[in-house]
Image 1 (cartoon, rainbow, N blue to C red):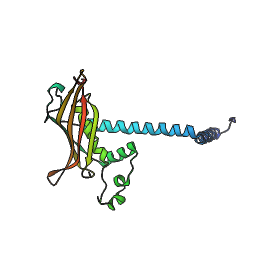
Image 2 (tube, one colour):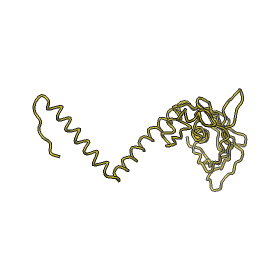
Image 3 (cartoon, rainbow, N blue to C red):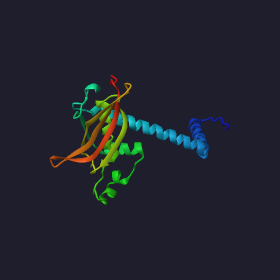
Image 4 (cartoon, rainbow, N blue to C red):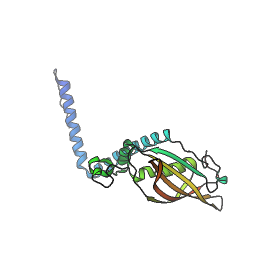
Length: 216
């Protein structure tokens, strides 16, 4: 586009307006190219998801305090009964961030009016939001562990501002040949405290492969 030289007291503002018109015209041309638009949208979405993931990770790891006999234990000395656990509060901010990260904008999680009409009578957290604490416990208790299998049953909903206690407990060990490591089977349980007792919200089993020596 040919740019016209502008003079006079209003020249600067006119030049800015002209530049804006050029930008709008360029944007229109870009939007008309479907392939370019799709690629741009994917890049924008990816950048947004990365930003949200980093925020969630930073927020979670700052307050994550995992305890239990499994924490810091040498893989060769792990035995059935060893466990690791963590407690994580479920907040509205985390639910909204998880919805943006995954694209799961089910109104049962986000719309209070819709949730009131459901059998839950209020908003509930995404099941995989609080269940994602399970691999977090594995990662902190058994650094270097590789997920092999996970079964999971959602037993009860989790409501906003509840604290979820996630516990993994070793039930079986299977050493693998050629120094590959050990397959460890664990129960994976999530619970919330209601009326002075814990209610199970997730029940499952997981198998992870732990290398002979966990990385420092």
